[in-house]
Image (cartoon, rainbow, N blue to C red; front, side):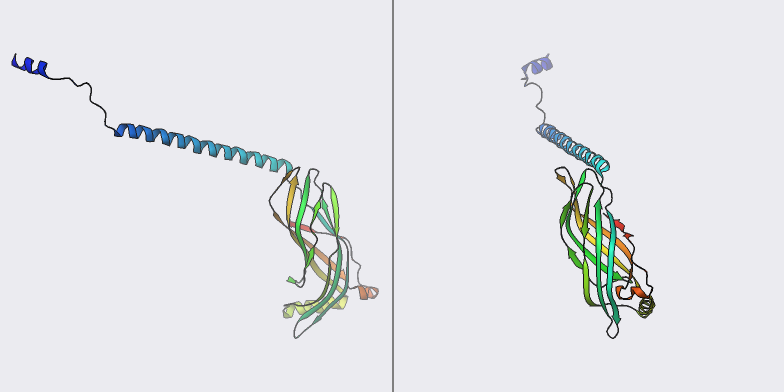
Length: 223
């Protein structure tokens, strides 16, 4: 009886209030959920954009330019020693064709670099230009002067052999930066490197039986 009276005399204050930290944890959990959803959305958008660009690139991927040396003339090619200097006069008519039907090419800068036995002995800047679809452009580099050239003993002997026949093997590299244009969209810059391996008769000695120059297709290494 005494215990019952004590129980009836107690005041009831309702259910206990949960600690404040439970609300903070729930708020933090909602924030993390929203952040995770946002990150997933951004990743999905980037993946979709990447796939779309890849498909467009595969559909409109530019074919290699077609480069050839139509004509070339070597009127001087002499070597002196102590020091080793090369005296030269070389000109070429170079054809560059864009074979693409939907893609234009912007040649932002372009240069012609002549090499003899792997040694560059000059360079010439060529004009920048835009090339439309199925279009051919002619370039006319002229390389003339003298330059120190680091030929070794074996390379000097090779020069002497070629000098006896008045027929020299000279490479011309076309190196530049190009952008491709798809309608109103233009890509970033790409490096273009083209190697033209030429067999050049010395013009002053053609009557001695040296071969004449023949049109030469070039190798597009990078585009």
